[in-house]
Image (cartoon, rainbow, N blue to C red; front, side):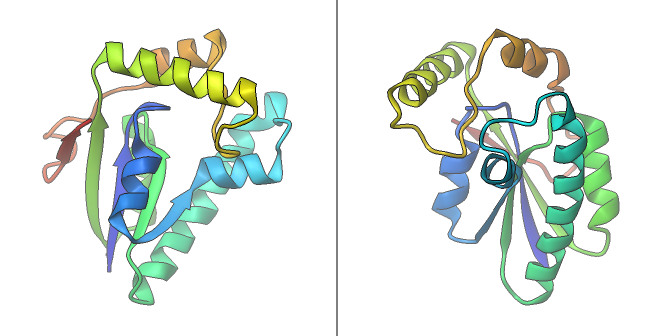
Amino acid sequence: MKIILLIGKICCGKSTYAKSLGGMLISCDQLMQTMFPGGCGEHHDLLAERARKYLLNLARQCANAGVTPVVDFGFWTPALRKEAIELLSGCELDWRWIDIPEEEWQRRIARRNAAIEAGTGDPSDYYVDAGLLEKVNRLFVPPTPEELPRLTIIRN
Protein backbone atom coordinates (compact mmCIF):
# COMPACT_ATOMS: atom_id res chain seq x y z
CA MET A 1 0.00 0.00 0.00
CA LYS A 2 2.53 2.59 -1.18
CA ILE A 3 1.55 6.23 -1.58
CA ILE A 4 3.91 8.81 -3.09
CA LEU A 5 3.46 12.31 -1.64
CA LEU A 6 5.08 15.34 -3.26
CA ILE A 7 6.29 18.34 -1.27
CA GLY A 8 7.19 21.63 -2.93
CA LYS A 9 6.26 25.20 -3.69
CA ILE A 10 3.77 26.07 -6.39
CA CYS A 11 5.37 25.98 -9.86
CA CYS A 12 8.43 23.94 -8.80
CA GLY A 13 7.73 21.00 -11.12
CA LYS A 14 5.67 18.70 -8.87
CA SER A 15 2.98 17.99 -11.46
CA THR A 16 5.48 17.35 -14.25
CA TYR A 17 7.43 15.01 -11.98
CA ALA A 18 4.23 13.30 -10.82
CA LYS A 19 3.21 12.55 -14.40
CA SER A 20 6.61 10.97 -15.07
CA LEU A 21 6.04 8.42 -12.29
CA GLY A 22 3.18 6.66 -14.05
CA GLY A 23 0.97 6.21 -10.98
CA MET A 24 -2.48 7.64 -10.50
CA LEU A 25 -2.15 11.42 -10.18
CA ILE A 26 -4.17 12.89 -7.32
CA SER A 27 -4.07 16.68 -7.48
CA CYS A 28 -5.89 19.13 -5.25
CA ASP A 29 -5.16 21.90 -7.77
CA GLN A 30 -6.83 19.94 -10.58
CA LEU A 31 -9.91 19.33 -8.46
CA MET A 32 -10.15 22.94 -7.25
CA GLN A 33 -9.63 24.43 -10.73
CA THR A 34 -12.20 22.02 -12.20
CA MET A 35 -14.79 22.75 -9.54
CA PHE A 36 -14.10 26.50 -9.25
CA PRO A 37 -12.52 27.69 -12.53
CA GLY A 38 -13.09 31.34 -11.61
CA GLY A 39 -11.71 30.84 -8.11
CA CYS A 40 -13.61 30.62 -4.85
CA GLY A 41 -12.29 33.73 -3.15
CA GLU A 42 -12.23 33.81 0.63
CA HIS A 43 -13.53 30.23 0.77
CA HIS A 44 -10.51 28.77 -1.05
CA ASP A 45 -8.59 27.56 2.01
CA LEU A 46 -11.65 25.91 3.61
CA LEU A 47 -12.65 24.19 0.37
CA ALA A 48 -9.06 23.13 -0.33
CA GLU A 49 -8.86 21.59 3.15
CA ARG A 50 -12.02 19.55 2.49
CA ALA A 51 -10.70 18.53 -0.94
CA ARG A 52 -7.36 17.42 0.56
CA LYS A 53 -9.05 15.18 3.11
CA TYR A 54 -11.29 13.65 0.45
CA LEU A 55 -8.36 13.10 -1.91
CA LEU A 56 -6.15 11.56 0.80
CA ASN A 57 -8.94 9.06 1.44
CA LEU A 58 -9.06 8.41 -2.31
CA ALA A 59 -5.28 7.84 -2.29
CA ARG A 60 -5.74 5.23 0.44
CA GLN A 61 -8.45 3.51 -1.63
CA CYS A 62 -6.17 3.48 -4.69
CA ALA A 63 -3.29 2.00 -2.70
CA ASN A 64 -5.61 -0.66 -1.25
CA ALA A 65 -6.68 -1.53 -4.80
CA GLY A 66 -3.07 -2.02 -5.86
CA VAL A 67 -2.70 1.28 -7.73
CA THR A 68 0.13 3.60 -6.69
CA PRO A 69 -1.27 7.09 -6.09
CA VAL A 70 0.97 10.12 -6.56
CA VAL A 71 -0.38 12.86 -4.31
CA ASP A 72 0.50 16.26 -5.78
CA PHE A 73 -0.48 18.71 -3.01
CA GLY A 74 2.69 20.59 -2.07
CA PHE A 75 2.36 19.90 1.67
CA TRP A 76 3.81 23.33 2.47
CA THR A 77 3.75 23.02 6.26
CA PRO A 78 4.66 20.43 8.88
CA ALA A 79 1.01 20.53 10.00
CA LEU A 80 -0.20 19.48 6.53
CA ARG A 81 2.38 16.71 6.39
CA LYS A 82 1.39 15.52 9.87
CA GLU A 83 -2.28 15.51 8.84
CA ALA A 84 -1.43 13.29 5.84
CA ILE A 85 0.58 10.93 8.05
CA GLU A 86 -2.36 10.61 10.44
CA LEU A 87 -5.00 10.18 7.72
CA LEU A 88 -2.86 7.61 5.89
CA SER A 89 -1.67 5.63 8.90
CA GLY A 90 -0.93 2.04 8.01
CA CYS A 91 0.17 2.94 4.47
CA GLU A 92 3.76 3.09 3.22
CA LEU A 93 4.38 6.79 2.64
CA ASP A 94 7.04 7.75 0.11
CA TRP A 95 7.72 11.46 0.69
CA ARG A 96 9.54 13.34 -2.08
CA TRP A 97 10.52 16.99 -1.87
CA ILE A 98 10.86 18.76 -5.21
CA ASP A 99 13.50 21.38 -4.39
CA ILE A 100 14.30 24.16 -6.83
CA PRO A 101 16.76 27.09 -6.82
CA GLU A 102 15.12 30.49 -6.31
CA GLU A 103 16.20 31.87 -9.70
CA GLU A 104 14.74 28.89 -11.58
CA TRP A 105 11.55 29.10 -9.53
CA GLN A 106 11.11 32.75 -10.53
CA ARG A 107 11.69 31.87 -14.22
CA ARG A 108 9.08 29.11 -14.06
CA ILE A 109 6.55 31.40 -12.40
CA ALA A 110 7.06 34.00 -15.14
CA ARG A 111 6.75 31.31 -17.84
CA ARG A 112 3.58 29.86 -16.26
CA ASN A 113 1.98 33.28 -15.84
CA ALA A 114 2.76 34.18 -19.46
CA ALA A 115 1.20 30.91 -20.67
CA ILE A 116 -1.92 31.50 -18.58
CA GLU A 117 -2.22 35.07 -19.89
CA ALA A 118 -1.83 33.78 -23.47
CA GLY A 119 -4.52 31.13 -22.89
CA THR A 120 -2.08 28.28 -23.47
CA GLY A 121 -1.45 27.25 -19.84
CA ASP A 122 -2.61 24.08 -18.16
CA PRO A 123 -6.20 24.56 -16.90
CA SER A 124 -5.17 23.30 -13.44
CA ASP A 125 -2.41 25.91 -13.06
CA TYR A 126 -2.90 28.85 -10.75
CA TYR A 127 -1.75 32.29 -11.84
CA VAL A 128 0.95 33.31 -9.36
CA ASP A 129 0.28 36.92 -8.45
CA ALA A 130 2.08 38.92 -5.74
CA GLY A 131 -0.43 37.78 -3.09
CA LEU A 132 0.02 34.09 -3.85
CA LEU A 133 3.78 34.49 -4.04
CA GLU A 134 3.77 36.16 -0.61
CA LYS A 135 1.56 33.38 0.79
CA VAL A 136 3.89 30.64 -0.50
CA ASN A 137 6.97 32.37 0.89
CA ARG A 138 5.26 32.94 4.25
CA LEU A 139 3.86 29.40 4.63
CA PHE A 140 6.34 27.04 2.99
CA VAL A 141 8.52 25.23 5.52
CA PRO A 142 11.06 22.87 3.96
CA PRO A 143 10.83 19.34 5.35
CA THR A 144 13.66 18.01 7.46
CA PRO A 145 15.06 14.48 7.90
CA GLU A 146 13.94 14.67 11.54
CA GLU A 147 10.35 15.30 10.43
CA LEU A 148 10.38 12.77 7.57
CA PRO A 149 13.24 10.29 8.11
CA ARG A 150 12.90 8.59 4.71
CA LEU A 151 12.51 11.80 2.71
CA THR A 152 13.82 11.78 -0.86
CA ILE A 153 14.99 15.15 -2.17
CA ILE A 154 14.60 15.73 -5.91
CA ARG A 155 16.77 18.63 -7.08
CA ASN A 156 14.81 20.09 -9.93
